[in-house]
Image (cartoon, rainbow, N blue to C red):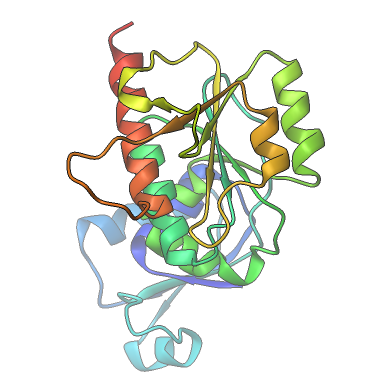
Length: 235
């Protein structure tokens, strides 16, 4: 697989979540960022090929590659570290999913659980739209969401589901538990009823206007991650 752009290549080098076969770089690029990538590649013994711009075009297909790309393996899955988990279910668009990961990582979330899907063909887009956060986060893919989430619950995680229901609580009035898992569903189908039944609490995002439509998953994650960051930093 080929990834393109300085941010994506740098994220792959720094976070070591994938094998890097070779880096392709324009020999005309002598910026501080590109020279850092050259230095890092050499320190990690990653082959680096300096090329003319015309030669690079034959390898890199994207129009926004910025003069650099790399041949890499698919990303490996991780073990989760201590801290909160966000379960993202049914966010199908890779740009939206990447934006969600970018926000989550920026606001201190380290662990992302994804619904079952083949993410391989989307990885180049995910790296770009997440500004490299796709390789910075700890990411696992659910084999069976009920078994996987039940195991996390048995391990002490308190389950919150974003769902606007009769018994849901206003998220702005909630103090989050110390070890929390937040479930967010995509716009098309939301969180499944079976997973909602597993939750310890359902939360909704109160609006400041009489708006009847739901926020998209990325906007909802922005709200949740911001509130979570604000509460965690005050402890």
